Length: 287
Image (tube, rainbow, N blue to C red; front, side, top):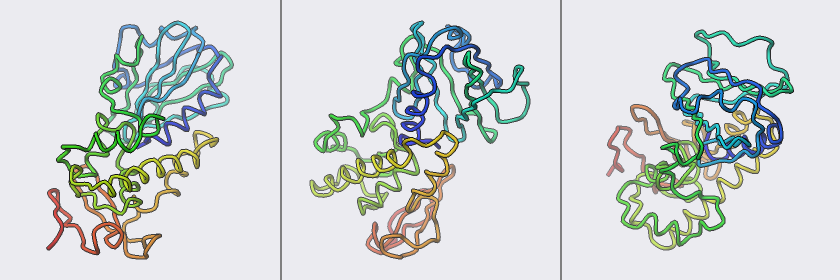
């Protein structure tokens, strides 16, 4: 799933390639991708793009007509830029293409989604806050006013485990499954530590890991073409998706806890005092 760093890089890329240019056509291919119908998606045709912004994991393309084309790429969605779009409208079918946006210059992008779950979402709204997922977002962890005190306040009374708390978009916007693993590894904390139990020193470590991990990932991705962002994310991850490999910090074997719809990876030596986590849905530290 694209998370804050990849969506931030896509925002930069689209700012360079879209702002100041006029939308010629918006062609939905998969009906499931459209989550709003009034205004219709065709209402942005003829409008000039004025800005591209990020709200958590949401991409917001603003136009001079006052409308916003807001996209959430979900787990298996992606944006593919094309310097020259194919002639003729795309044909509906069983392929990954969900929506095509064409500029007057014949450039544009395709929104694609692999798999069968079809969670990729496109909204056309007058205000991004009309999108329910945007309206419920918590603070952005890379915002200038997101300081250590604010993180401590967010975690006060939070009885969930750190892994789940970090992934909650209404608590902190933009962090998903991959970067929550990376942040907790950098902070040297168990994913199952209760968020409200952090000491001031541990809160400081978590804050530094949160800001540092995301900032480094954004910098690695900045300036890359949209098509290269997926591979850059994979190469930059230290523990997520690396079950069975040696930890780059201590050399211990990276382990995994699997759930029904996702998994997490961690280093026992760096994060859990050398003790493995039980690999079941309600995992607890093995005694």
